[in-house]
Length: 268
Image (cartoon, rainbow, N blue to C red; front, top):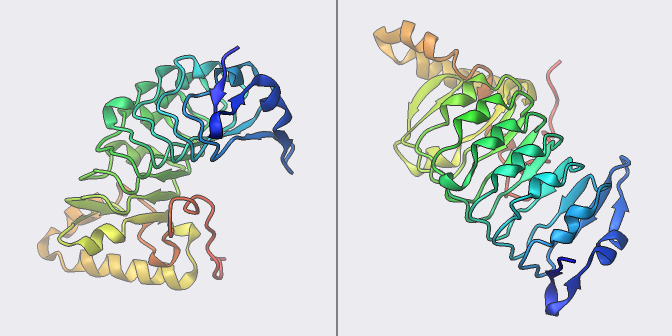
């Protein structure tokens, strides 16, 4: 039986893992093994057929098993704050995943497989705090994706395929060396670090009236200052329709970015 080593040399066996499974309020079975000093992914976990959510965050895991895709029951997988440099191709077999958190690892773009595009049930994907400068173009197939975290990486421009993700409502691109950005389709040169700080995008339907008006006025002001190129600007503004930069809902850190709510009056 494969065993993972936890804090103080503790052996994580299948028996121990089964006892740690808890029922969440929504009826899902959740296994939390966070912050246990685990250095090797416990392969015994792959024998669990009734776990819906697995939390292995804040450990020291450097590699996922090549057959991680056999964990077919998973709907949520949290591996943030480990030491992962790559993700195996078999992750594309986890077609039931709705939430995947790989933030705060050591991932490079070459370590992301094209099979990520097979995770068509994904609603939330967090790849923040890594060393990424581009994403597999196959991710254009993630039609269900609503929230994407790419903050604290090495992107110099927004991934091109984002324009076809029709359900994307939140995009966190803060702290990237962006040479230019496109907000609601409008190309904006990034001339200072302040522009990097502001690259947190949400859909306009998520904003309160005040924030929406402020964003629209800023967008219209920039577009109006382009002089004779009005036609080109209008064409570009269709690319990322609905995505804006709302400072009032920018996430504080990678632990809360996905669940943070807008606490002001919604649009009616």
